[in-house]
Length: 246
Image 1: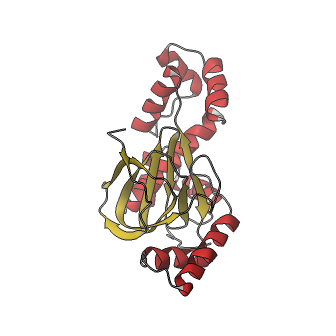
Image 2: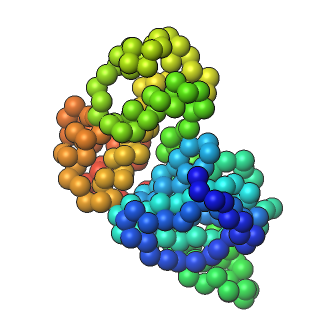
């Protein structure tokens, strides 16, 4: 990551971001919830990357060094929350249902509102965040050099059809070793890791208005229908629907 900036207060604001733009590495002394009502937002830390379309928001704990990047024309809503509002050690992706969506949009547009009504809105927002189910869209970052190199290959070409054994040969390792490292370092199997990474790329491409068929092939699904089904299982809706709530 580039030079890290310390921002004591987590901003509460609404802003527009063009595709590919973002906010460089920083941290603050408060929690922050980040939400893209349009477009797709990626949040990266040393532990990996989290991605959130309009049906998801990312809760970033206080003190976490992170950076944001937008994909597609994005309207970003951020709300700062006091340290005692929520608990957690790393970012969490939560489902954004209609009420939470409206609370995030309203609160981010009224950063200075300390009226009784404004404080009540913040209280309801915090309650909704506590009750929102987690919807993990996380691509963990490995530390072992062999997994780092494997991750770079997958990131460069998500559609690379090689099996784990094929990658292991190219990396001078063994499939058994790489499989063990995936479980130990990432907490998931190699197919699960690759699927998460492919979904990460797919969401970015869809935000840039790429056709579903093209996204399916560029991200490694054999057919558009298999991609649509995998996307529906993860997201709860089909990629052509662009759902804004669950």
